[in-house]
Image (cartoon, rainbow, N blue to C red):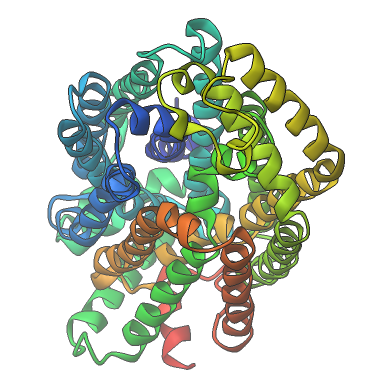
Length: 509
């Protein structure tokens, strides 16, 4: 691979594969979460803890991932991410109880958290300014590709093993070990970040890799670039870090972009998509298909976002995404309010049909609305299925439009996320910090992202019991109105600006 452009692309793809496994791990659990809850008889609180274990690990990885990334280098950390993914996949698949399952998921979460620090950072540091958005954005593209492959993988496993299989969920989680191994071996071919090498005093090695990245540079231009990196590092080392204006502003921007990213509801909607759609009357098979459709839309519009990020800029994409968020979430909230009773009838009918065998031994499993018509002496499977069938047909006469509207709104929400926040967040955070604080800053942005993701995933099952879907989606819509205000008032444009020039721009704001 002697072509410099091909070499750079290969390095970016290899590094971005950490994002593929991240995305795969994030969504693969959605196909298994209901089975896991029933298998171990978990309460809403226990289920929330088990489902959020990976995200709490992600918080730990994001908080502490910047230190080893800065101390030991980007390449070594990227390799260890693959090892953590592999251990998590095997441990989750063979877990005999919920405790070991949660521990295994926590380990994988650490890998995810560190990957959101090291991978975008590495790609941004090896990329020319005019291609940095697209190349760093490949991390997000691979996350979305991982989401799509995970939903297809879940559907294929259910199709092969059957929806009643007691072990299908273990295969869903264990298959992640394969891409984890492939990624780990590919990491051996990565170079170290030239900016990290120069910052650590390994000038000649850093200059050599810069030459591979910028083959059109003359010796003079290459030397000038090395000097520019050294001077930026010298300026940073002489500044009080906490009170240095570029760092303070970058910290605020990183915190808020990560905060608003999660308060859109993206992780909750992706992680619980089959359950959310099930609330409108889609049965489990349809909900899983629709979850696959959601990730396909995510992939398509992520590609659109990456196509536009170096043309329109980061700020413009955040405008587009914010407006799309507000519209789609508001429509979704309205649909759940307008068709609430019809959705409930169809959902209860599906629950009745699914529990037909268990009801023979426990009549308390009959939804309250059907208890008057299913008597103690008249609860044969045939009678229960007949009641469920007619109730579902009657509810569907009125709810089909609302169910379709919810699905379309969620697809619109995903498209808005993919073209806006999804395409921008990791690129933006990796760009705005000065070199000496880049690992620390990436950690802060990632940690903020994952703290709120973990809280949201933990709280969401409880929120679904305590609040209506209208209230939940209405809250997300309100938060996106606040995001739009933030974009208008605070967000700078980083398109086409070198990493060394970024700190000067922030100093002048």
